[in-house]
Image (cartoon, rainbow, N blue to C red):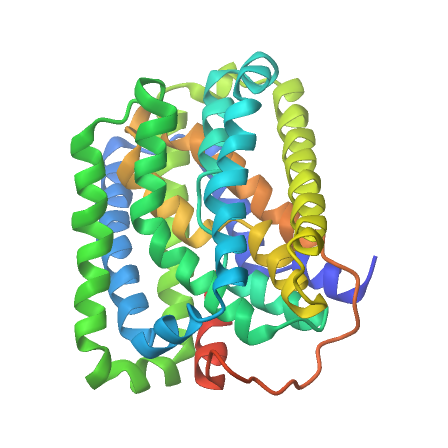
Length: 336
């Protein structure tokens, strides 16, 4: 295993995340602490999307839409092919993984692409870095609206989601993001210069959401119903889904006539799912009774997509032309 993959596995954030999951399962938390985690998580989610909006230069999103064939291919892979795969495999997953993990796996397929992993892996494979930055960024913005809509349309009553929760997504995610965009002309440069701010809010929000979900599930006795066979089945299922999407995006790019650089963007952005967006959104969309089981497949898939990467040479400096600025690239690398 390469040194870079070992670093992925030994990432302090991932280790902390796994430790919180283990502690939440093994050590029952009092109701007051679970309530505090839940309240803090909701506030952190709103702050997270406020920072996202303040960090992202509006011109980069607009300019990123000019490569319509690439952007359309990434959007189709993320919000059409992935959901169709999740819908087609839901019944087998329900039989093998149980209803809750099957629900989480289906939710996973409805998420937007990740930013940091997509851009970093595109750089490693010597793809179109500017295209990757824009594709992943646009995917995350669109996901604030498209993911809740897909959850309601595809998952329906099985998810326990009602229309009021979809409105909560607008209130807690889209509104802060729009406020951040309005503030962006004044504070954007400062926010982009403070990479630790986005990274800290990003990671802190995920840890709070996971702590709330796992501790809540422990209090409800959920983990007593999970078997090792289901855990192994979840790992296998995540690996299969990832392998299918890697194959479809790579060869699909060839069918669409994309050049190698853009095919790499489609491969990286079209096969990834965002932990940073997925977990905060899940905390708003799903009721507490299903939240923990829904988030576990997202965590598992996220770790797999970090370990499995397209073979390529180490990153090297590459001129960014056409669609996105170097400031945009720098500001997104510290975001999931």
